[in-house]
Image (tube, rainbow, N blue to C red; front, side, top):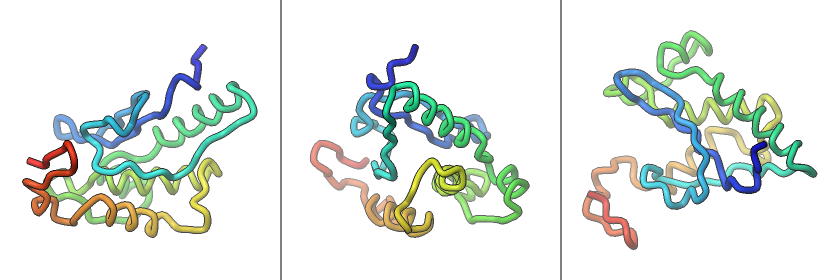
Length: 148
């Protein structure tokens, strides 16, 4: 049996590997120690009266997230709309996937953005993550992390 109280979080991330998009998923104990995340942004806290119910909520979230289309073509086929992604990554990126994952979780009633919409939350997160042109961050020291 999985002891959910041992896991602090689950990292879900759309990753571009070998010219294709895949879902990275791993249990993490301290998400703030991640070397690959640009921003840690709290969306929703899952709580339940028992470990079993908490695990069931996690399983539901996992299934929803795993079914979010990966990649530009899969997304366009599923949603019938185009979003401008990174042209070097087949016109798609992890930010597009994150927005789609949030919408899917909201649709299933698994997260609540407290009256805000996904675009508003994503815009706020993007403004907190740093400048739109990350090259302007090169050489900047962020207290133990120097962007190179």
